[in-house]
Amino acid sequence: MTDLARLRPTVAELREMAQLATPIVLVNVGLQGMGFVDVLMLGRVSAADLAAAALGNFYFFITSIVGIGLLMVLDPIVAQAVGARDEPGIARGLQRGLLLAFGVSVVVALSFVPASAVLGLLGQPADVTPLAAGYVRWSIPGLLPFFAFNALRQVLQALTRVRPIVIAVIAGNVANAGLNWVLIFGHLGFEPGGVVGSSQGTAIARWLMLAVLLVSCWPVIRSRLVPWRAESLQLAPLWRMFVLGAPIAMQMFAEAAAFGIVTVMTGWMGTTTLAGHEITLSLAALT
Image (tube, rainbow, N blue to C red; front, top):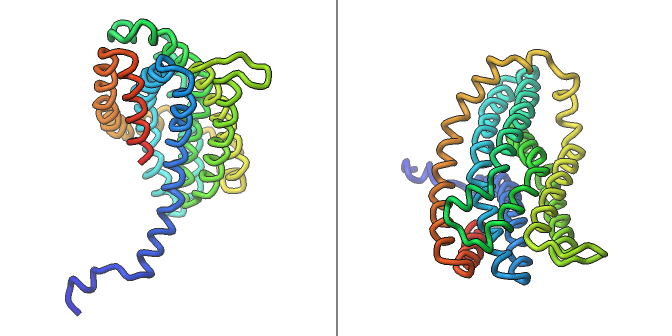
């Protein structure tokens, strides 16, 4: 047998890789699917609302992507502890990851406060900026569950437990679609909220996703989360996690900024163009 033949994957190996990859694909599609449904529904409201979603998403992700990058440090830290069968190390990683998620939530929330002024300085359409700023402000209540979900996701992936994540994402998508129907269009006695209603629905759906994830994975994380370890509060290890995660965060920020700059430039061309850009970007992100 030649060296090339030995390297060729077998059917069994390909099947095993597909089984490992499929849940991760479903999670990623599900997370992008929430934004895709927002675009589908907001497109039926107005071009201004759809354009505001484009600016709101730009502002949200250009700042929160740094936090997501920092939390990705949990993957190698927890995976290393799992490989070494270091149960205290897994527990410390989980607990410190949740602390890091809380700290990131506070910092990102503060960066959301001046959204209106920042978008104005970037020369975005006057009829869209107030709507986009409202979208960003209503995203603040959903920041903690958003980052806590990402922290738990990294830990569970390192533990090779992906099913709870899939269940939570499915629940979040169903809730997001229903909440959008109520809050965007104004059903069941609610006032039509447009793009702000979309942001409110997403924030509620993120809390539901976190709750479903905690319930689904509680048998896996209970002994690693309770009791809380005093050493998890030590600043030096938390700082080391920050230092390790910072390069990941900066790389992800640079990538997001490339798309963000295009969004800002599209806004200079007007509301309708910005709305069309959001449709295109959502389709690209989903694929």
